[in-house]
Image (cartoon, rainbow, N blue to C red; front, side, top):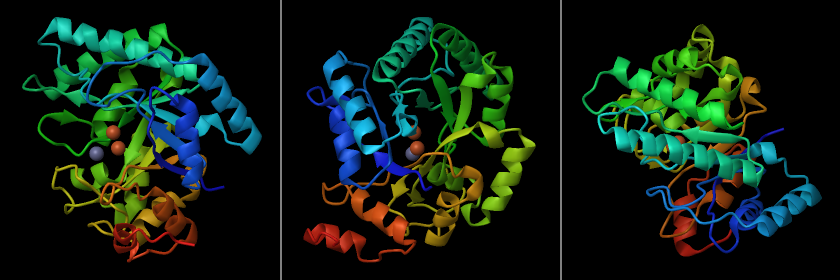
Length: 295
Ligand code: FE
Ligand code: FE
Ligand code: ZN
């Protein structure tokens, strides 16, 4: 069965229940959320009764909570320890974030590995590994390291993620999140996804894939830019994205859209519909702009 969803909101007042309702309105059977603003570390209390209501609703509609994923805020950087206070803050913040996942009944958290900012890749990797070992010794969450576009001093090629995973002590709770925009921007050809799969195999990462972010890219292969585009409107062929989404190897892995909103409107209902129809909707942007709902 296709497991597809998108990034959804998570507000103070509706929390997991609101996120679930949003996902259901998109026709999704998976979703990803930030438990607060992605660009800061301010976090409000998780309200137990809203979580209970959400879990009850999931049971009623047959929504598998294993297909719900949290994304850690992207300002967290575990690769750089020049500022020790900052580095320790990041570790403690993530321990707390994992505890919030546990409160919400969510098992998987996606994390950007980090940027070494002038240290070296090797030092950055050691910093990430030490931090992950500390975090994973305190919580039960599965942490999925996201493949990155290679912007600036970002760590997050498949090789680098394989190295990190190799050094992390808690092997059953560390994995990888593939992002098609980031992979393409890094230099992997999504049209030749078999090559990516072979690469994953050779790095022992194939059974470590716990989430796939499905995004098109506004830039050509190898641009190292990281600017997402709606599926079929960028440089990755729509067929290539469908091939990732419907790949048998990743059938049980949640696929999450993080494509840009169009004129302040989330495009996910329409994009998910097109994916289910296996057909590129060239009018998607125009129709959303005009406020036309697909039947
Ligand atoms: Fe991400
Ligand atoms: Fe992503
Ligand atoms: Zn991105």
